[in-house]
Amino acid sequence: IGLIPEGARDIRIEEVAEAGNYLALRSNDPEKYFLNGGWTIQWNGEYKAAGTVFTYERTGQLENLSSPGPTMEPVWIQ
Image 1 (cartoon, helix red, strand yellow):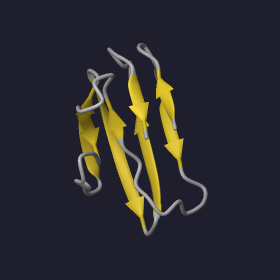
Image 2 (cartoon, helix red, strand yellow):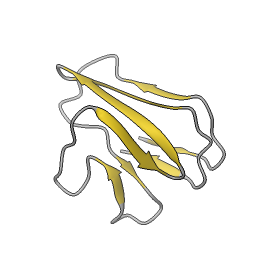
Image 3 (cartoon, helix red, strand yellow):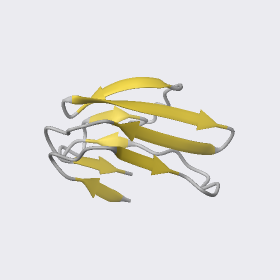
Image 4 (spheres, one colour):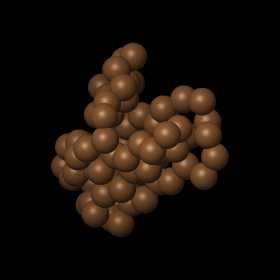
């Protein structure tokens, strides 16, 4: 979906319509997922990624991700 750059702050990603899949966070390494990758789906909670903490919330089929930042490396949203 997109790239969160290194140094990003006040991050908020909000689904506004059902997509039929799950948001995932990964590093520049395409095999290193922080959240919902490699056929694993996580529950609501806080997840460490790129030197900060992301809060993941899933209500029904809609998902939200937020983080105060700053990110210490780029993070890909998939």
